[in-house]
Amino acid sequence: GQGAVKEELESRSSYMRQVIKDRNKFGPMLEDLIEQIAAFRPRDMRQLEAFVAEVERRLARLSDERMVLKHEQFSAWPERRLDLMREAVAKEKELLGLIQAADVSGASWDPPANRRQRFAYVEGKLQWLASHLDSLIRDKDELKKRFDRDQVPFDWPLFDKLKHSPVVFAKYTMTLALEDGSAEMVEEGVRLAFKCHQVAGGFDGECNDLFAQLSAFLEA
Image (cartoon, rainbow, N blue to C red; front, side):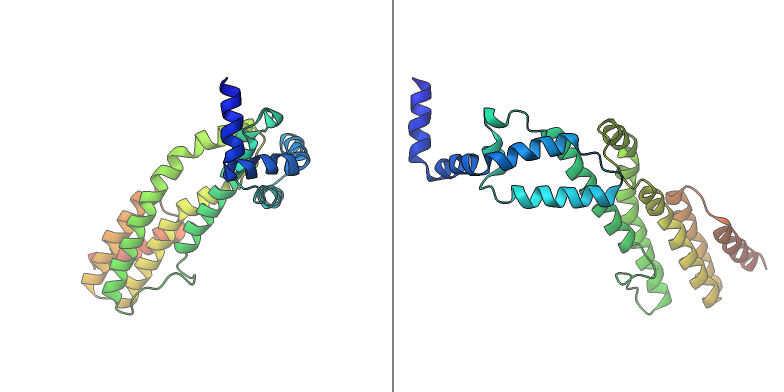
């Protein structure tokens, strides 16, 4: 019958022999992980990161994670919950990477020496950031629903910090314009600051003050 054919194929395949060997060898470890993943309720992202790293370390011992787990012995494997935990860790890493890349005082911020070219550099960074922000902010509510439902923690203020980055770009740009002091550069500073305002959805007090200084310069 079909079962006999399946057994015959499995016995002839070195790949499947390894999968079966892994099921036997790591069965107790996987059954222990089933209980741990289902029961684990992390308080914060640090606990979650440490737990996911340990789960990944153990699963890395398998020749093929999906295939080894594709067996009735592991039918209770909490795949959806582990996927959510992995997603939370990956999302935090993504957001931290974007925040770091948008940090005007960070190591990755490397504008040209020429002031005019710096404006073009900031505008390029703004366009790059805006393309990421749109989808991240749009998906945030749905993400929060899924994480909350399974009691998976997340560092939600990271979204606000990233959304504030265009405001920092605006301060950087307007300060450059005021330092230069030429009408042409001030006009360029106003134009770019307005673009930053549109992406950020508003300015803070410091930005408003800088914008007022630029406006006053142009009106003088």
